[in-house]
Length: 129
Image (cartoon, rainbow, N blue to C red; front, top):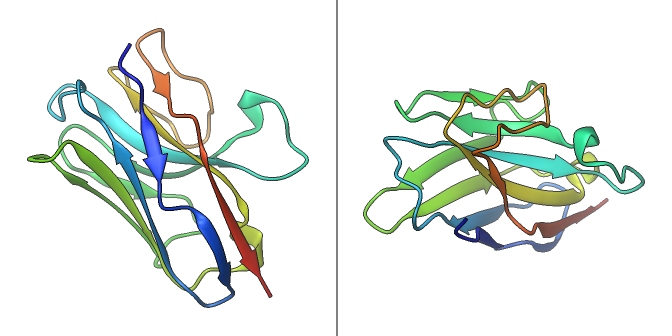
């Protein structure tokens, strides 16, 4: 499977903004659903990851309640990129953020992908108070 590569993580103060990027070359936006998950410190298992935002192959977006109104997921089809714009960041948003693609439906409530799903390597976001 083609590797997913995230970038854009870093350290920011509460109230600040970051934009995460993920190269999704090799994964057609008309076939693959795409999403961002995160894993907070102290939670090690993959199934403990939290779904943050989803954009399905039809372009419909869904957000976790904890980020609704602050985060925006989008994709640049021409450049094979997936983005997560994060505003009004809070210390609770501190986590490793993962880009995800899957040909089967992605459910933000379940951090389990189908055999066709791919996880990125993760990028760290740290929000200080």
